[in-house]
Image (cartoon, rainbow, N blue to C red; front, side, top):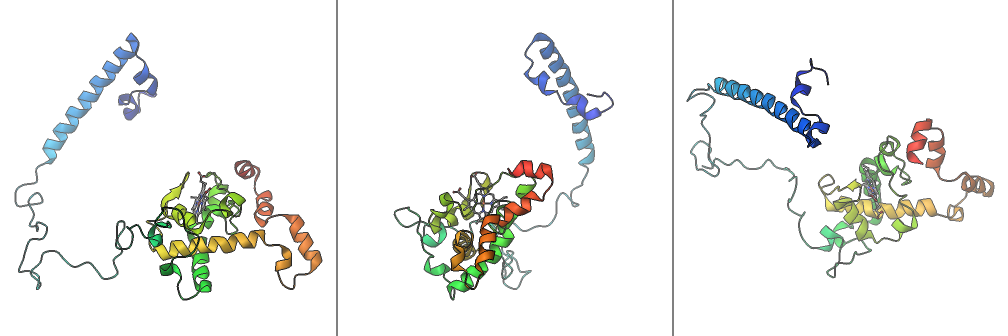
Length: 255
Ligand code: HEC
């Protein structure tokens, strides 16, 4: 601790806080005295600076909530919410026990199909929407291919499981909706960020398409030459190949 550094002088060192020996106690008392001197100074400064006089900043004209006024033509001091305003939390359509908002049936088990409200015009539209949202919100960690090697993970964030691992694939759609909405372990929830529940369902539906794409046998891909198919299969997932070209320390993190 340097004595020229004013701040570190008044902040007790961790070892001193936990030191219950006589010397530790004495040194803590010393710290306390410095602390009091500082608080006294702050108080004096505060009193000196509270010179805002009546009629200036301290006492401004204001409306108490819901007070009537003749100033606005609707006689209300409360102004209407700007059209299109989105509630940050607890907004309309965010709270409730429906399948659409929880991913769960009435017996609390997760459903495995899209609720009617999330079906859109057709499945292809829903999947395209889901793909877009996945790219924005999920790929930074899970990677566009779901292998869990997105840029945030390559910089040290806990690596998530592959989204096409059996343990994830075997989960029902409602479970994905719940993970997206409320988070899971080290992953935080996206309920407040992806505000529209239909978008969260669209991502959940897209996860199924992603899983199929990563586990699909090459025979399912029409017009794909046999030799190329075999080459591709022996090369392993794309993300592994990308990882190997990265710097050594990054490889350490993602192993
Ligand atoms: C900031 C990084 C990050 C982002 C962004 C992220 N996740 Fe995750 N995700 C994780 C991590 C880490 C785990 C593993 C959590 C654990 O087990 O502690 C995880 C786990 C999961 C799981 C598996 C849960 C299980 O049962 O093991 C699913 C499904 C999932 N995420 C989906 C998504 C979707 C969909 C999005 C986009 C809306 C998303 N994640 C965004 C980091 C992230």
